[in-house]
Length: 212
Image 1 (tube, rainbow, N blue to C red):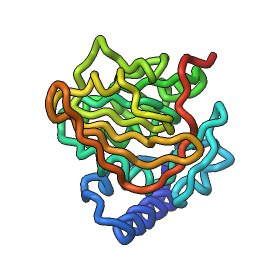
Image 2 (cartoon, helix red, strand yellow):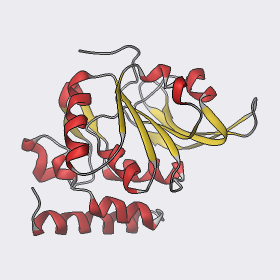
Image 3 (cartoon, rainbow, N blue to C red):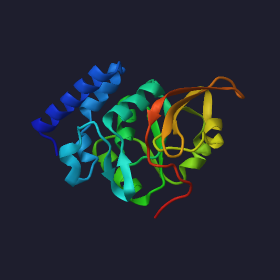
């Protein structure tokens, strides 16, 4: 599962991220611990620590390490934050959030990815709550959340997710159709939100419903 080669590749990956941007060191430490090669398809494991997105099951992708670090950095995780993740994917971003001490509730609409995450995350000792369902709906029964992270491109900011943010909470979401803008939504009061943008990005589309 793990050898010195993988550890060396992870160390180089985090050094490159450190040189590229002033990320919170806790994020880099977390990413240096997580065996990213176990989250990608076996045929792609030699590319797991390169800074590029990789194909995973169900025609989805695992984001490049820089994007994972940037979304996590913008989210500004505090220990014990209650975090809703929309789009579990292969579970790598989920693991980063858990490594930072967040209480993670993650929703995945693709059955194959949901089942994969159910296997790998507990095997690596990450205690997270995983759900198979429609990310657009969020998880109102568990709201409010301190943080919400969306790992797919939404044409707009879903109102249902905004209302599930706690006052003082933050959502990080790629917004746009063909390409997206990384967007931060801060809930200032019950009725007021502050929205800021943080550069162009490219994600698979956020879709309603579930896939078997």
